[in-house]
Image (cartoon, rainbow, N blue to C red; front, side):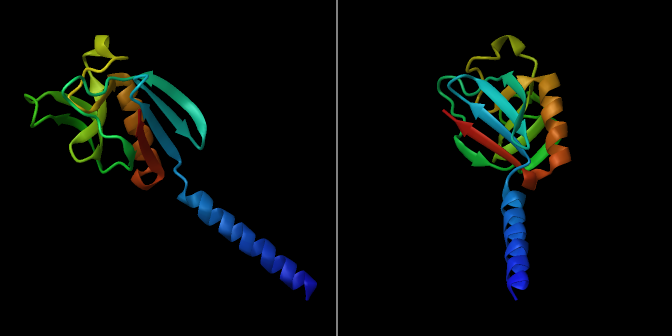
Length: 143
């Protein structure tokens, strides 16, 4: 009887632990608006740290915790003069993490609210999101 109870306890603990682990995001992008950086972690290990540009004065980058809503290999802004947005990962309405040609502004606020990064880095992040899946990706935007 003791063996049965012990085995049941071990099995329940393993199942409970797996369910908690499965809820954790595989891929996490942490955008720090105050430092204009994006840190990408996979399974809790930092993979990349990139300079970004978030909203400049008069605009807003939403803070919070999000999951990707949709992606586009190439998107053109309907709101801002058909501006190209390569490797877009949309996370909150029309807000996205995407590549930019305006790399000289990376590291300081310059966007209309999206999170801009170097196009090569955007391509890397885009591929990581596609591989991990929307449900296993978390995007955190903090001050």
